[in-house]
Image (tube, rainbow, N blue to C red):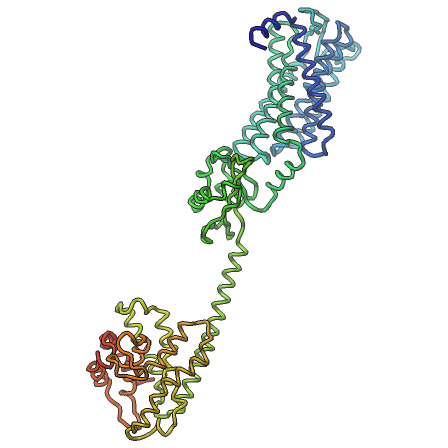
Length: 593
């Protein structure tokens, strides 16, 4: 139907017909809503919906009875009484709605409101009983009129009516302020959309009530169907709550309860990046969220350390299919009050249409602490095993030393020498690709094993006073191979591969020469492992500065000069260069260890 035929139809309809259509429509909608709500399971939402619909039904029934009275006094009077009763009950609907929002209503306010409803209801139901002393408090006098052929109760209001109107205005202001404060401070336990819809559902009939009273006062007629029109809009809003927002749907209610009571902080964000809901755990755990209001941009509220992570999660491919996006690094967490939270993001999709996101911050404190405790325990046990291994190594070395009494203290001194040399090389920036603090420590640990193969050499050869024969020297050279074989059989299965390799290399190659004339393999230059080249210098230095059966003790300066003269032939020249800086400390070791 076009706009012009509709205007023609409305002109042909009487004002009385229009009022009857509006009132009947509102009454039918209210009655249908009541039937629907009464079939739902009892809940906080169901009780609020039921009470609101009863108020609407009472008011609309009052208007309907007046319109259908055909000027019968009793029907008009009874209809007026129902209109007043519905108006009084609106005050309790206001308190119930605010309480549903999470607004704290004192018990005294409930008691006072029920008391006022009872008081004004007695006055409303008594105004036609002249015998009662209070019959004129609300309506002093009344008469039946028929303006525009519409039955109407013309009345003269009493002093109680003025108090009632003042209280109605106060309740309306209280409701509006309470709702605004609830939304701004986000005290509500309910979604912002539901809060706004319920507010309109109550405030529209209230607004229409005051508008109707103003029109009646100005036009001196009671035939304006503003309140039924308001309740028609209100009932349609209620239908939106029930059908679209699933106001009393048990699954929706359960989801809302779970969202608020789950221990995981969570935030709902619309597709434009604005906050639509924040649960209580999020407000308690994060000060940033406790002050956040609805529809603020999430980027302005998120903790600073999470903003980069959130941007990366938004770009995750999982956002296109509703998968959960998690940080790529375990370090992308935020700490608050001793608790550690990891952000996770999931898109809200329906038929591939994006509606928003849910961001939750999973408490991973126990996992993080467990990992730290586990790492600490592993470190403790590793150190314990290393101490046990070192003791075992020193035990093996002691066996070799006891087997060759001519080398007393040699193993301990060479361990200190190698540590000094390796540390100085690191400080000088030499061999940076190989030497670090861990390498220096391991150098000291494996050095005592360099002569472990001497356990297999005859003591007569080891402690011989004079020069060894070629045959005896040939046997002596096998201690490198025997030592490497012993280490391979005893340490190869260790988890510390670097330790095993260094121990094996110092035992096998510490008699190799820089120019390739050493034994057992004849390696030259950088072919010789660095640890073996360091060991070679320390071994010869200690041999020169120590008393042996076949020679005397050489002064430290002469021993150092001897080594310098053989740099580039027997020894690595780079290693020899750093000896001057540690000469004093090497001399102390030779004297006191």
